[in-house]
Structures are given as C-alpha cells and as structure tokens.
Amino acid sequence: MNNKLVEFNKSQKTSETPKFRAGDVVKVFRKIIEGGKERVQVFEGMIIAIKGAQSSSKMITVRKVSNGFGVEIVVPVQSPNIEKIELLKRAKVRSSKLYYVRDRSAKSLKMKFTDAAKLSESEKKTPVVKTKKVEEVTVEEVKEEEKVA
Image 1 (cartoon, one colour):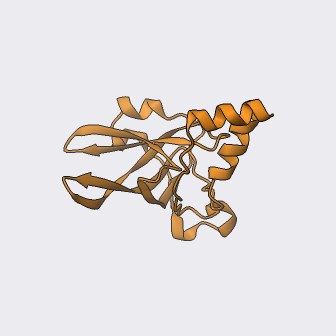
Image 2 (spheres, rainbow, N blue to C red; image 1 turned 90 degrees about the horizontal axis):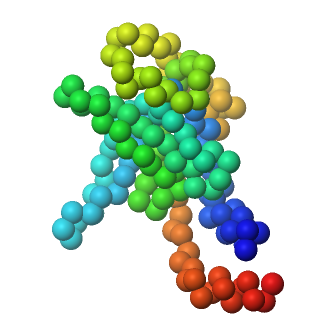
Image 3 (cartoon, rainbow, N blue to C red; image 1 turned 180 degrees about the horizontal axis):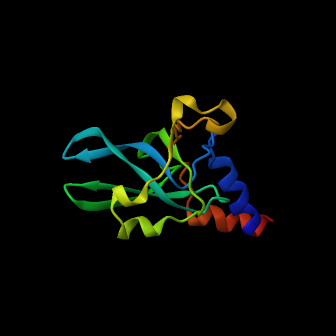
C-alpha cells in the first residue's frame, strides 16, 4: 500500500515545483467561496516554516502583521484552492523554522532582503505555482488495488 501512496503522491505533483525557503516574502492567492460567489483573496506575508518538504503535500506557514495583530495561515502548496503563489522578496536567514519571529517586532528583526527581480533564474526556480485538480479515489478502489497486488 505504501508504494501505491508514493506513486499517487508523485502523480499529483505539478511539474512546476517552487523553491521556497524560510524568510521568503510571498503573495498567496486563495480562492474563497462566499455564498454563491467565488473570489480570490491575496495574503501577503513571510514564510516562517515549511513542513513536509520531501512529500507531495508540502505545507507552508505564512505570517503577517495586520493592525498590530499577528496573523498566520498554513497553506498546502498543492491545494486546488490555491490559485498561485508569487515570490516577492527573499531574506537571508540561517534557520529553517522562524518561530522566533512571533515574539519580536519587525524592526528588531533587521533581516536583509533581496528583491525577487534581482534573483538569478537558478535561485527562483519557478516561484509561481499553479495547481491542478486532484483526482478523487475511493477507499474501495484502493482496497481492490491492494487485493490485485
């Protein structure tokens, strides 16, 4: 069964895999359904953590300060509700999880940012991600495949 899951996860990956790191400032374009209407909401903030970087379902934690309050969202990169993710700036950081940012003010961080336009193509590695629809698989289909294998 583990092999089937690995193959399924590989099939769901898009060809454009982003090279995000902790400290990147990104814009996340999320599809939101309110009532009968669908719209795109933009969330701009800094990536403070990346979880599951080796799997197909990478999760990024994006944080911003709005009206004096810290707001964080955890975004699955391959979700169909994510229209795209744009890289704006890249900070030079030395740790992979920036949870200490929660306790400090923006002025006290003093991070050195590099504009995304100035980054070389090898550093960018397609920062804009467009996802595809995920195929629905029922539990019965997976059990039938296990019996065959």
